[in-house]
Image 1: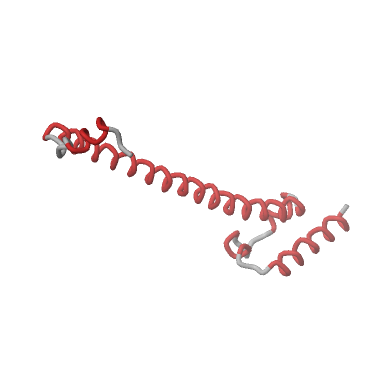
Image 2: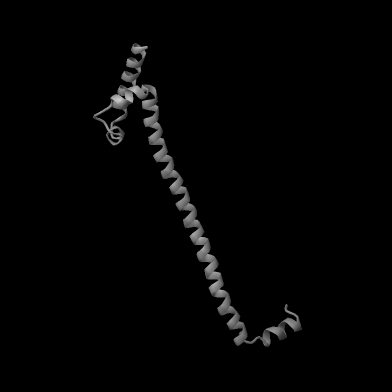
Length: 111
């Protein structure tokens, strides 16, 4: 059971004063700013991760071209006249493998 002092404090409870409401009106926008900042931070973190992922994809594709042409050597690269990097990027992997194998064979036979 509540004590006499607890009962009397409940009985004398008054609604928030004007001063308390002013403080509350100040705190609500501050809390909303915190919430918005945290939300923006999450969005920014996701954007950073998406950017790293896109960069990794781009870099991987470029490395694949490097791997293909590193096998051929610079002299063979100079002989390529009809294919662009964009054209090669659209080739299916079996075709790319075929090119790499043939370049390797030609390089070995030239040695």
